[in-house]
Amino acid sequence: RKEVEQDPGPFNVPEGATVAFNCTYSNSASQSFFWYRQDCRKEPKLLMSVYSSGNEDGRFTAQLNRASQYISLLIRDSKLSDSATYLCAVNMNRDDKIIFGKGTRLHILP
Amino acid sequence: SQTIHQWPATLVQPVGSPLSLECTVEGTSNPNLYWYRQAAGRGLQLLFYSVGIGQISSEVPQNLSASRPQDRQFILSSKKLLLSDSGFYLCAWSVTRNEQFFGPGTRLTVL
Image 1 (cartoon, helix red, strand yellow):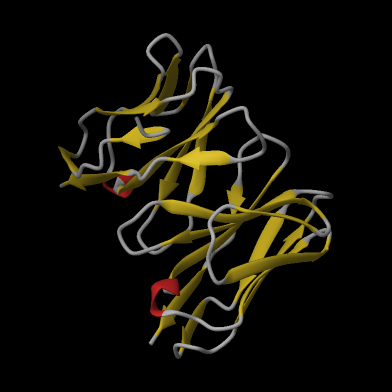
Image 2 (image 1 turned 45 degrees about the horizontal axis):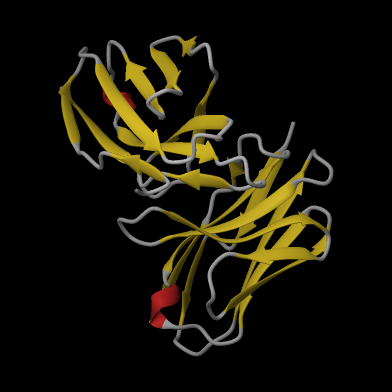
């Protein structure tokens, strides 16, 4: 099993729809979880940290399911500008490294 | 606030030539620093990370090396580039085990 795994997509979603991504991780001792957004030919930018209780930032909601070892990202009322690749990242609690998933591509269609 | 700089933004180099990419961080002390490579259509590959001056951990055996001569400076080098070294090189910083923040990256093409 890969350390951090994501569906590569692409997800083609009409504008205004709700879209959800999952990301699974292999190490049950992992403590820190993150979602990043990467636009084409740009650096990844932190979108949200994921807390045990779940967290929400506007149209974005992140949740952690420790029992099933996955994190999720929900985007409501999607905008054209949400089109990007979304990377999940997990600190495996071994050291100061974060393991990144390969990303899920999202295309919002007008 | 913290900022991270990388240069150059783009680079085209012939096979066998040397490489030096620089990354500097402002606004924080004793950060963890990281070098990643992202090949076309692929994920982020961690190359090196450093928890302090002169402390470098290598993740992948290759013809690249890294150095940290100052607290907020991280350098990626190669003596002889290979075609397979082409990619998008990203520097990142973090405070221990927390989220990482990336620089704008250097797009390297080896011909």
